[in-house]
Image 1 (cartoon, rainbow, N blue to C red):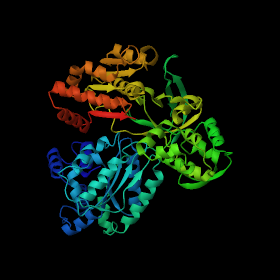
Image 2 (cartoon, helix red, strand yellow):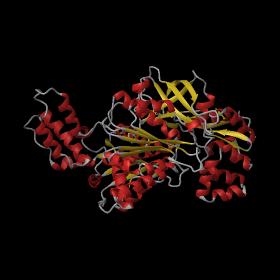
Image 3 (cartoon, rainbow, N blue to C red):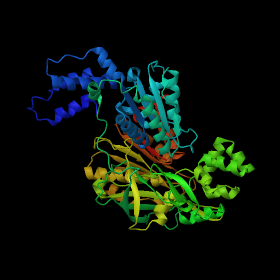
Image 4 (cartoon, rainbow, N blue to C red):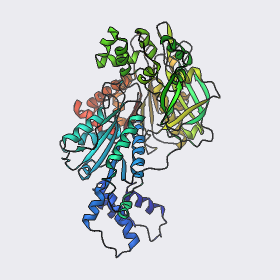
Length: 614
């Protein structure tokens, strides 16, 4: 919390006759005075005001050189996070730096004034990459500024970047790479080389954090201790005791199929009982689910590799190297239902199979191949004689799956609901299922425990005003967060209009939560609903087609302040919807394609165009 925010909170919470509170004019004057301060200047001002209050009105201002010295000993950490991973890493980095005696200012990059970067001396950025190499929503403006013509030269800045990404995507860690390359071009000096982390980022991020703190400790702990304490700013509220590293063991209470008997899809409505854990969530958040691999699949994989499963291997678990059996490791610790391109390269090398060598030689081909094959499919294609430890070292650790929460606690209280599509397909004569979806839909029994945690998503939130209209576009399981939105708006007795676009294959088999949507329409909470069932007629119809049909009305809603949300498939649906929106804005706003894109960028910057895509 910045100093002016802290003073504002104090001012509004005190009674009107409290003489210690700022009056409205004083508060306005203070806010105007600090409006252009950098984070370092705000930190110094915070300390100065604290010292002033303790020493009395006659206290003298600290000499400018001392103030500058204290400011120079501050480390600024910025995080650019779409789903919360970068925020979590940045929080751990902050703790480590504070423990080493370093003064830290931690900020969401969206709350950072980009021009203030010219006043920084030490900056660390933890950045994830969104979609096809795009910056997270919170980082759009900072990214545009830093890569634009107005970015200042930064000869006095020392920095480093930790980039988070997924090597399964073409533009792996691109946002972090953009920041790193641009800061170097502006004259900043690397404290440590950029580290690019894959989905299993814990080990790499921990090593980077330790290295960075050790590198900066001596340089950033030279300030006088009495002065240093005044710039320690609070950065966040109390966090839940449950996290990715410390999940809640909750009761799995319901798995109900909500697609029809003849549907080509198996979609489950999942309910999990949080009991008296105190775990809370907001609509728009995701639930992280830890899972175990199918024992039958593990048995087949072991047989394919000629392992018994009793072989002992060493693996880092919860920060410590442990000796486990190979079977136990494959069930509970390692990813075998998703294949990384790096494993394709590894297996091509050890098997020397000509087909795999060809696939691995091209990164795009390797990514596509990895996306279509599980580990067992790859090792079945080509034989290789390796030991258990070598095989284990080539696999990625299991990472929890994130599911958009399909409920509002105002409605379901100590429960959390999910909408899970079972990943299932035939390969080599066997049925392959997704790791987490198969675990939730087929292998967990009601009453058993499942390890979960809440991943807060501040980039997918209902408008602050209940009177603001919203447009929701969520085909298939993308409907999940909008079910939560409607529950929340009903609980709030929100007056804003609500418009839902839903699509799937058939009306009779795939209309997820149909009765609930019909009831919302009947009550008037849902203003209108447009549906697109692609296989109910000769010509396929999708949600973007329904948007085109209602183009003038969609634009009218946007012009009167509607917030627009998209949830679902990132590769095709979200791109097609975005292009359709651009065309709608061009036509009805009488704008060029570039101007329409700027219109959409403005909506995103103002949190009026939000995506939860995967």
